Length: 358
Image 1 (cartoon, rainbow, N blue to C red):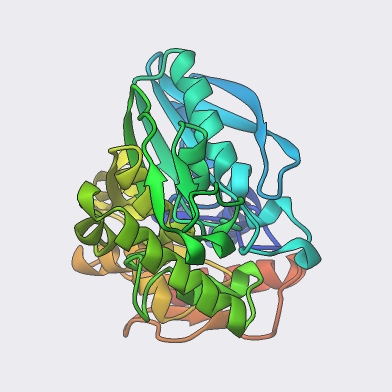
Image 2 (cartoon, one colour):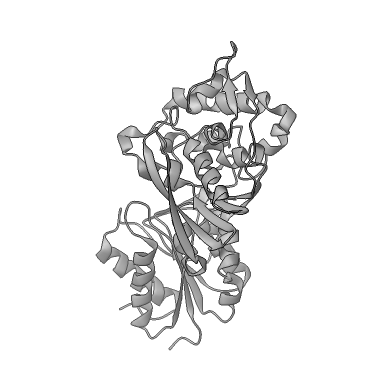
């Protein structure tokens, strides 16, 4: 029997499994070889943030706000205490709210997030953690700022329409207010706002073709130029400014907020370093692991922290490349069904613990 616990950091496999399903499969696999498990549900600020913090959330509220294409959505908020709220921006302006055919970052807006923040502050929040990731938008947070009275205008002074596509014609922004609360954006990536490695590299997955991507990139460039007096050039270069289509930038510029790596923040809240002590291994996974997974994503952060602590690591990912040396990997086979997840989890546990394969 293994001498210490096997740590499982579970998160959703997009489009297939929930974090709970992944964690349960790994726990069953460990149980068959007599291993004790510690199951953590993780998040990098995108999918599953509220689920990851479930044990620390003492109440939940919900609010009706504007969705990514204008229709109303009901967005949940978790409260860590009476004055501290947690928001998943993807539940307000995320891809999960749209069909594949509806994806269009030229039109999608973050306005609903601004509305949500205002309502939560009105209900007593003085500190808000805003998880980024999974957004359908690339408006640099301008839609959010509209809800606080900021007005983007074109050359003739006319207000611009919603969506990232309109920002290419941005001339100036009339100032509005800032929420009366401390905002902390939890970035799931390290990309800056502008440049070839900026927010534009995620435009295609939001539904943009090459022409739309160029227009959107021009738009965030114009946004920075039009707000230089607010310190935008420095803010645009920060790690995570390009997260959620530039929402990381918008929360710092328009909301005066902070910007921190989401994966590290969540792992610290879960006391991951303490849990690692004495562990025989760490097993984690995601739907597709690649070089970007090592740039702020939860899976990469887990593997890197475990490796620094000298704890053996394992990875479950139907698609996997650029995996750190020394990591046990179970991948391939296309999109997994529940049976394949069970089989792969069993193999990963046995290989990680250096036990014979069944």
